[in-house]
Structures are given as C-alpha cells and as structure tokens.
Image 1 (cartoon, rainbow, N blue to C red):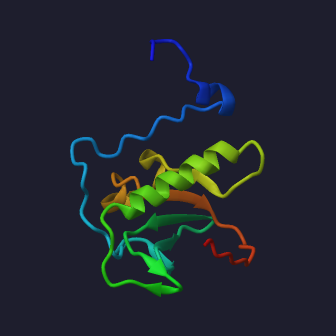
Image 2 (image 1 turned 45 degrees about the horizontal axis):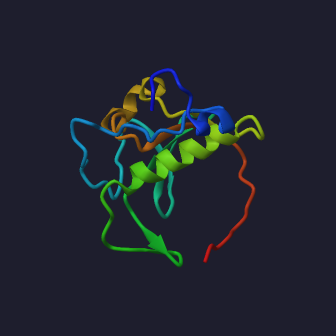
Length: 140
C-alpha cells in the first residue's frame, strides 16, 4: 500500500484495522493461568478473566484459561488472554460511537501501579465498575 493512501477498511469504519503489535521483542509470553496482584483487591475470578476492584473502576485481566460448556479446562492456551483482550478492544473501539461501553483504557500507562506484573502483556483493561445486565448466549 502506498504511503498516505487510506485503506478501504479505514474509510468504511473510521479506524485503522491493522492488527496490533504484541510484544515484538518477545512474541510468546509466559502462560498465565491465574493472576496474583497482591496490592490490589481481587473481586472475583471468572472462567477466563480475573477482576480486581479499584473502587469505581475495575482492572480486568484476561488469562490464558480456556472453558467449554462451563468447565475450565486444565491446560491453558499460550497468549489466549492477549488475543481475547485485543479482539474485545477492537470491537469496543469500533462500536463506541454507537453505544457506550465500560472500557476506560487498555493503555498500560493508565493502569494503577499495583498492576505492574501484567502491564506489558496486552491482556488487561481498565474499566468502569457498572452493574451488569445478566444474560447468556451460546454460539454454535
């Protein structure tokens, strides 16, 4: 593609759709099956995400755990949490002008100091603490 020429995707969606750069100096990060941020308050562990309470905000860390049919499998998948967070980031960014969402930032510079062990892993989001709307869906 020529320099200065906007891609078709950028014209259609208004954002650059190139894939994110993830840890170029270390493409395979250590597998993270569970997080331990001792200086932060653990609010809960979901099937794949660990959630830390920051008062009016949450720090959500996507681990490499995998689940199927409500069962967490014993062997995590390397970098799954990174892929999950980057996909979520893409869609929340793409739809933010259509509907508000809970994501404040995925920029590590905006995270609290206590999250330092997971700041470079591209798997963490700083979010508003909101009341969830209970729902469930299965995709086949």
